[in-house]
Length: 99
Length: 207
View 1: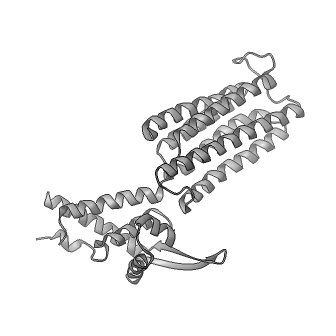
View 2: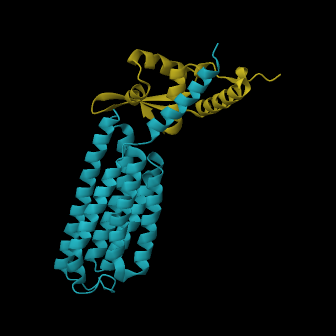
View 3: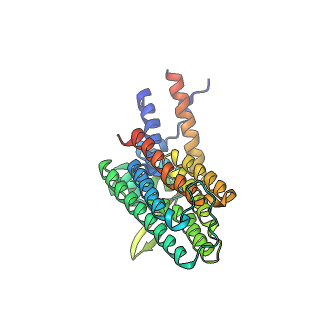
C-alpha cells in the first residue's frame, strides 16, 4: 500500500521552513529582513531554519555589502523546488486520504 | 503526529505567504479615480490649445502645430503624470499603513522599477516624436507604452491591472489608426478608463 505520509518531506514539515520555501518559490531571490518580516520570527530562529535548508541544498546563500551593510540573499535551488513540489503533492494526497 | 487540520493549515500558510511575498496589494482604487480626473482636466485644458475651433469629434491634424503649442502640451502632460504618480504613492502608502504593511519593500521597489522601464522608454519616445514633428504619434505612444507598463507589473499586483493594460494598448492602436482623434482617445484611455477601473477596484477591495 502506497502511504502518502512517507512522501512528506521531513525538512519541510516544520512550518517556518515551509514558509521560507514558499517565499523563495515565487520570488527570484529574497533577503534576510524580508523573510523575517514575512514569517514574523526572531533572527536566531530564522537563521537556524535557513541553515538547515542550506545544508539540505534547498537554497543557496550569497553574501554581499549594500551601502556598507551586510546583505544576504537567498535563492531556491532546483533540488529545493522539486522537494517543495513533492511535499505539496504529498500534503494534497494526505488531505484527500483523511477526508 | 500531525493531523488533518495541521496539513490544511500548512496549505493555507503556503498560499497566504506566496501571495503576500509576491503581490503588492496596497494599490489604491481611489488613486485610479484621481488619476482619471487629473487626465480629464488635463485633456479639457489641452483641447482648446490643440483643437482651436474644431469640434471634439472633428478631425484635427496634429502634425502642423508650432513649437510653442508643443511645449505647452508637454508641460501639461508632465504635470498630469506627476500629479497622478504622487497621488497614487500617497494613497497607496495610506492603504499600506491601514493594512499594517510596509510600503517600501524589496517587492514594491522591484514593481516600481518594472513599471518605470516601459514608462520612461515611452516618455522619451513621446518627447522625441513631438520634437521631430510627428506629433500625431504622441497620444498613441502614451497609451501603448502605459499599457505595456501595466502588463509588465500585473503579475505582482491585482489581476485587473492586466485587463486595464490590454484596454490601454487597444486604445493606443486605435489612436494610431485614427490620428485625428488622438486627444479624444487619450482622454478615454487615461481619464474614463482610470475612473471606471478605480471605481471597480474601490468597490471590490477597498471598502
